Image 1: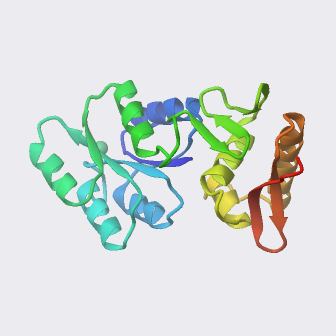
Image 2: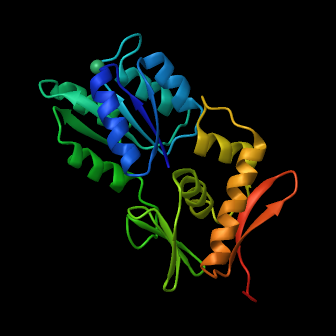
Length: 226
Ligand code: CA
């Protein structure tokens, strides 16, 4: 999953980025409200951590503008302890949650996990499709008792396919979700990672396959014959 952090305090933003990356999220950081809003409007994020006190445009205005544009991405506000009015206005303006600075990183992580939980999934740590289970914590794919470790990009790609398992994921959307908006990558890079994942699916003897729909993208399918 891809998370946007809009925070102008570099040390805090870097710390959050490091923690989230360790938990297998992809992270982008922007430092002011105007850029933050542009990134949010790209609709490529699964969650936004938005500071209230920001240069150029404050977090509350960013939040209001995003909701006005129909953006439904979960947004967690970072507010200062003294500013109760920010919290109320934030929630009234469509924030999903807020956390008060200074905060405990573990508490923020718990809230992020809760807000990025896939509806219907049994656990915040696992996704399943057909006979495969993807574990976030262990960054591994398993089928029955067979399991295989995934690299970071492989994990992100598999997670994206599993979350969207009811549809065909366009190639450019997968590239943006996994490699990010700033890291323009070649299509063959995506194809290479898809082939890695196919090998790993065969390795664990999964009945799940990655199907290519020509000129459109990729999707997951359960193959009855194994
Ligand atoms: Ca700030």
